[in-house]
Image (cartoon, rainbow, N blue to C red; front, side):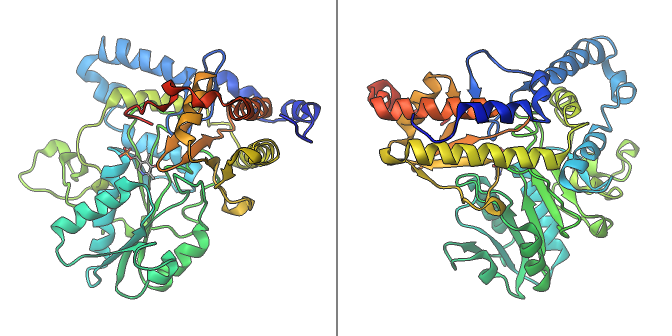
Length: 415
Ligand SMILES: *Cc1c(COP(=O)(O)O)cnc(C)c1O
């Protein structure tokens, strides 16, 4: 790859990287440059340690006593409060529970219940499909509800918001393009119309300085297995602003959301604060792994994370445009830093095959239909040198046509 960017300047960036020691907190296989932390974060060493303690000691030795003794019952709240700092929430506003999809379902109902005289829900037509599927699921039990989608019912989400809108569900960072929304401006517009704002943070929690309360968000949901590295299927989080506590209601009224679960009352009475967003028993082993994963964040400054993330993506974009542009690769993520999350999406008609060829060479990203190659840049374990090497391998694959080998065209179930 021929480029004006000097390898020496890249080594300097690594030398002066305030986050460079964080890589040691993760187990990463030799010979792999991992650019898929936006889909499944790698394993933090502390997560393995906690998982072992949880399995052998808490489950194996202490058995049922661990619900109290090891604080299992309180994990949704204690872990939620540890994530709060990363998303700009106050203590008591966030719980770890269920999946992002289920939390979207609950938050949509809760938002609609706060605006009973309105009927519309607004979302992105090109948003992550589960978000739209869950909206359809909510609509199936609320026959008066109307759905308005950006890109279907109007070009911009802002133009779909009027005084019949109860709830707007929007992604902070688009899963496919990596575009970042202005949370302050859009939440302001949503509130001006009297509606409720639900932010999906799946692609921003852990890589951006998310500021839910400063921006007035009403609800938020997000994954913990992506940039928060909680492990495959680790439960998600849901945030509800304190001003809505006492008025939270959603239809999955399981016993964990009850005011007094161990009173075993005949009828549901909602618990205090954020508790009505809980439903039932959670995957404790996964939560204990997440507890370990969150240790990595304890001394991390999110401003440093964001700055490094922008430098990593700046560098990758520059290398790809200088080196790979002539092979028909285009950059889909916005160039403006204020409109960019922490991933770079490249488009190419043979993006699937090119990604398989990259993975074969140890550069792991992923592919999203129809032609997006996604590269996620997680500042805690990636170096500037990794970015340089990944871009050169991409260049080699394009230049010598390695990706044309027929084995790279076989589509796997998970892309
Ligand atoms: C990854 C992701 C989800 C995942 O939902 P699950 O219920 O955890 O499978 C939801 N929304 C967005 C935007 C995502 O990126």
